[in-house]
Image (cartoon, rainbow, N blue to C red; front, side):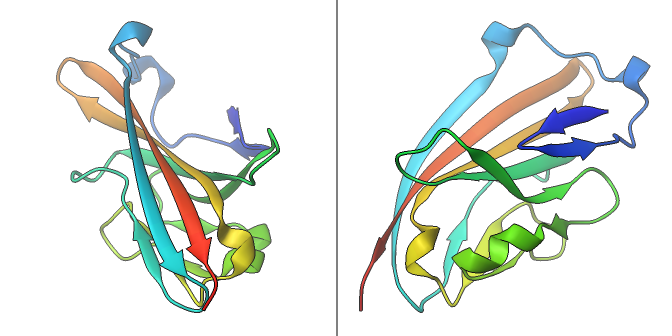
Length: 136
């Protein structure tokens, strides 16, 4: 079990096969995005589909990272608390987070924690996207 963003996840992968590489090899990618209230925006979580991913959201001025979507091998799941940000979805066979009918409250930091199962072990990449939301 993993606790992330207040969400307790039971991983579908056998833990003995999940060998994490050296933490210094964790990759951190930072981007910015701007969208307008009522529009839609797509936040990327890499160009390759990860084995497991978890999307979290942090509202500006807080340290509270809340899980909004995840996929640990059985298809993407959305968390109910994400509805105040807009209509969220994860398109089939992607790890991208799409927010339609964007709300003002959607402004903040989105983090996608992606785990890739490779021949050399599990590779972890954190994708940080700062989303600024403009009024009409």
